Image 1 (cartoon, rainbow, N blue to C red):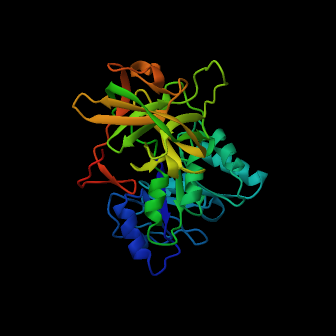
Image 2: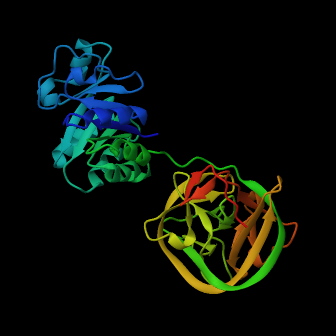
Image 3: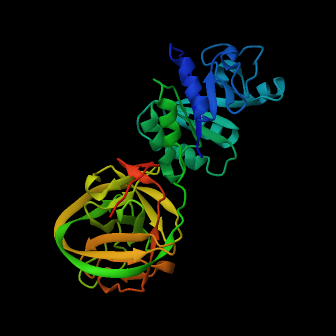
Length: 367
C-alpha cells in the first residue's frame, strides 16, 4: 500500500472532522507545523512535523518524523544527532534542472524526501524515481488532490512511495486512500461445467477496448447474473481471418455484468472511455485497466449455461461466432461456438447481490 500523508497545516473550521476521518481511514501520517497540533493523535498514525518557513522548535513534542528545509534548518544528519529517536526527512521544491538534481540526491540518500514539483509535467518525477530506484529511503510527492495522487502513484508503473496532500474538505482522506490502493485483490476462480448451448437470435454485443495490452491468459469476467461470471479471453490469440487486437475483449451482450474496481460491477452497456474494469488471469490475479472505448453492434448471440461444483448456475450470452472465446483451466482457449456439455471453463461466483453496482446483502433473484 502506498503511503498517504494528510497535510493539515492550513487548519480551517473542518480540520477536526478531517483528522477524525483520516484516523478512521487509517491514513499513514498527519502533517502539522506545530507539535501541539500532533498531540492526542492515536499511535496508529504517524505524527509528522513540517515547520516550513518557521524555525525548528526546541521541543519536537511527540513527532515521529520531522521534515526540514536544509537551507532553513540544517542537515538531516546533524538534526538526527541532536534529536535521537526522531526520524528526519528533507523537503525539496523542484523548479529547474538544479533543484531537480538536489531532489535526485535527496531521494538517493535521505530516509524521507518530500518533493514539491511546481510544473504540471510528471517527467521530473520520473527522473527522480529512476535516480532513486535502488535507494532505501521513501519519496513522498506533494499532490493537489486525489486525482493527481492517483497519477503520481502510477508514474513509471511503480509510482512515488507516498503522497502528501492538503485536504480541501471532509471526504478527501477517503478518496486519497482509495487512490493509494495497490492492485485489486486476487479472486478465487472456480471451474464451471458447461451444461447447455443455444442460439438465441440477434442482439447487441459489446467489445471492450482497453488502454492496456492483455496477456494471453487474461480477460475480463462477464455474466448475465451478478452471482456468476465466465472468464472471456482477450483477442491476444491469433485468428485466421483478422489480426490480433490484444487490447480487446469481445465480452458479451450489453446487459451483462463485468467486474470493476472496489468490488463494483458494471453493465457492459454503461462502460465508456475512462471507465475501469478488472483484467483477470487464469490464476485469479487482477489489475485495473482503463477502458478506451466500447463497440456495441448488432450480432447473432449464443447463450452458454454452466454449473459450479456447488450447484450454482451461470449464464453468459456472447456473440455467436467461432472467433469469440473463453478461458478454461490452465489457460486453455475455447471457441464459444464449439463448447459442449461437459466442457470446463473458468468463472467467478460473487457472493453479494447488487444495487446500482454496489455489493449489498439483500434478497435478489435473477433468472
